[in-house]
Structure formats: structure tokens, C-alpha cells
Image 1: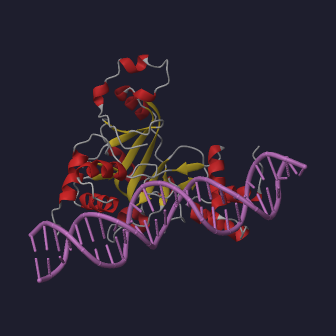
Image 2: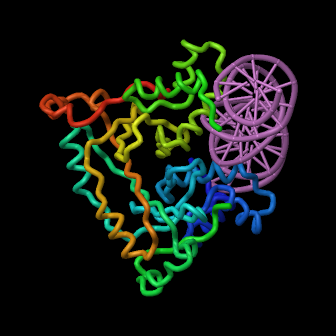
Length: 148
Length: 148
DNA sequence: TTATTTGCAAATCATTTGCCCGAAG
DNA sequence: CTTCGGGCAAATGATTTGCAAATAA
């Protein structure tokens, strides 16, 4: 049976307490503030456990590092190519496209991952700022933390 | 100046000669048949070079391993969750969606990656075969090789 | 010639694992 | 008590890098 442990508790709490999509290492640093003796290995083990339990999502986006998400719903992501931050995108998931691909390929399509690339507000080149000023910032969630 | 070398030639030829989306290691094995003394490091160095030159594409799909594609055009992919093979999907790239996300987020969206998941023909569970029999197999390119 | 590329091996980096000990049930 | 979970360090596996020898221009 899966036992309840302090370290798993804290790890989940940290993950639920951030809108960012942190790496295992960032989570490790946060948890360490509360449990200074926890090891990275334990963080990885528990992230995998929480993932199996369906309590968190592992975003296997492009790039090597795994990132984790406290929300276990499907949604798309945006990666800023300059600062590396990951943002949740509000665009509704297109379920039609799975069916269309299934029809045209004959495969069983269970889901899809969609990742946008570009530059976030902070990384826009100067002079393009007007377009930013009146953009509806509330249409998506902003994440921070994680990347270098 | 970038010099022309036999090893880079062979690497590119191998990549152009397969419809699959091989890993660096698979490419290494193939090239080794012709150049037995080539090293994995050289393969990686040249793949990066070819990528910079725009002659090949590095597919940074989910999962850790990088895969390379001899076609430098944008297209979507399908990953079989059982056998791990990657297929090119014929679905036309949706350029509208980039604009829509750009509008709703205020970000500059340069591109997107779309990856479907599911089961390919060979990995379909038994009894679902009728759906496969009359499916138009020619709507996409099949890849082989690469994965474990 | 001479700067670039190779081969090889050692170095990284994220992640996983083995093992022994402490703690949850 | 009896396992499971944790800490720690060593192992892994993909990719990168340093360096001396080989080679394209």
C-alpha cells in the first residue's frame, strides 16, 4: 500500500501552489526550504508516484527537462523561445482533429500534444510594444520559475 | 568555413534515404556500415551542423531521445504508444491557430508542434481489425527504425 | 600549410536505482 | 513488528566537450 509521507505531501503542496510548470530540480529547491534533508531522488520518486495516481501531470514538451503541472486536465502550452518560460494557453482543445487523423490514418488516436513557440511579452523585441499594450492578458495563465 | 567531409556526406545520405525518424544512435549504426571508424560524437556534431544549415530537422517530440528528419518542411507527427514508432501525419498544418493564439495571448507566435498519440496499425488490439482493413494507408508516410 | 574536423575518452546533466536505515501502519 | 519509503551515492543513458592527430582547402 502507498503510505502517506511528509515529503510527498510537501511536494504536492508546492506543485499546487504555483502556476508555473516547474522542473524537478526547482521543486526540489522549494521543498528543501521546508525539508532540508530531502533528496532529489525522493522528489523524482514521488513525482512519478503522483503522476501514476493522476494527481499531477508530467508535461513532456520538447527539450529535455521534464516539467510538472499540478492541474490534471488537458491543455496546450506556449514556450517562450528566449526566456524558456512555459505558459498555459486558453485555446480550447480540438477534439475533432483526433477523429480526423484517426479517419485518415486508420490509427487509434488517443490524444494530442500541442505546443506553441514564440516570444512572450517580456521577450518581445523593442518597438513592437503597442501590440502588447492592449492585449487581453487574462486569457491565459502566466507561469514563472523553473528554467535557467 | 564549413568543410565538406565524407562523414557528414554519409550521415546526410542515410537520413535522406529513410522515411523513418531515426535517433542519433540509429543513424550512427547505419553510417558505421560504411565508415566503421566514425564516432558517435561526430554523428552528433554533424547532425547539429546540418540542422543549423537547415538541411535537416530535429524533431523535439516528447520523450527524451532526439529524432531527426531529412525533410525540412513543417509537418505533424504521430507516436505509437506501444511500439514507439513515429509517423508523419498528412493533416495540413493549421496556420490560423497561431494567429488566434497570438491574438488571445499577446505573444508573438512563430510556430507550433503537434504530436498525436495512440496505436498504429500493427499495435491495434485484436478484434478492431475491420476498421483497419479499409483505411487509406496511403494518406501518410510510414516510418520504421529508431526506437528500442 | 593551417584551420577545421575527426576519434576517442572523459565530462555533463537529468533521471533512476541499490542498499541500508528509519518510520508508517 | 513488518514493510514501505527515504537518504545517499553510485549507475545510467543521451548528448557534449577537450584534445591531439588527421585532413580538406
